[in-house]
Amino acid sequence: MRITRVLCAVLILAGASTSAQAKLRVVASLQDLASIADTIGGDRVETFALARGYQDPHFVDAKPSFILKLSRADLLIVAGLELEIGYLPPLIDQSRNEKIHPGSPGYLDASIGCDILQRPTQVVTRAMGDVHPYGNPHYWTDPENGRVIARAVASKLSELDPAGKATYEASLGAFEAKLTAKEKEWQAMMSPFSGTKIVTFHESWPNFAKYFHLDIIGTVEPKPGIPPSPSHTLEIINLITAEKVRAILVEPYFDAKTPNYIGDKTGAVVITFYPSVGGIPEIKDYLDVFDHNVSAFVSAMRGKK
Ligand SMILES: [Zn+2]
Image (tube, rainbow, N blue to C red; front, side):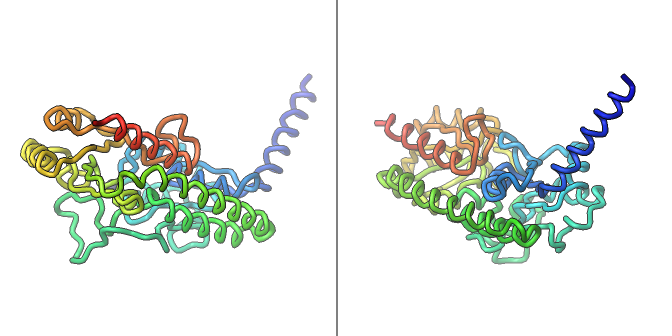
């Protein structure tokens, strides 16, 4: 009995260490980045995302379990542009994992090479509470940036695990082909609404709007990260009325009270827009984010006379 138990424990440990050695451990700040790493890495990687898709990615509760994940990670993928500034730097320090420190080979800033909007033209100050000081960190809402991220992930995985290079390159090719086909579908669905004026809760969508030719004319937040105020809400109501804005996009983690109030006053339709994988269970991978939001937008516009 005792021997059996010991044997079992040894077997379990042996099995765990074999599979652990075989897989690269990837931690990503966002489920979107983890999804892309899963798609490219397949069976050769094991991914974990810190922020869940239904959470505000600026404000993530740092759980002790994150430190353990980071301490064992071979690769950390971040959105960068200070999206994770509020919680990640102390976790990286506490993980005591030199491999994933900024500047180390196991640290990948996914923003590099992407089309980043709203870059500051003046000296950066956080005095106004703006949480986008170095440009817009929600850039993965442009599917072409997703392509750039996937290429960077494939290249990084190949660097860390040269034996898997052919696999990563094949997965990248398959992902890009699927993305290209999907982009044609999404563009066909969205093209009738080109130029549509919208308001968004947070500045999560400038990349999405640029890609699909939507015109964001204002935000419910006075500045990124600053909650709605009565005076700004009144300004937005006046703007929506004057500009005949048709839709207000609201991320799932914001209180819909103010957007609903604005919608009631103006007739603009309030649409829940999901920036990330995992925002709802049906959004399982990076391409699903666009499938879902494009369908939601088109349905809302068609429903409006
Ligand atoms: Zn933001």
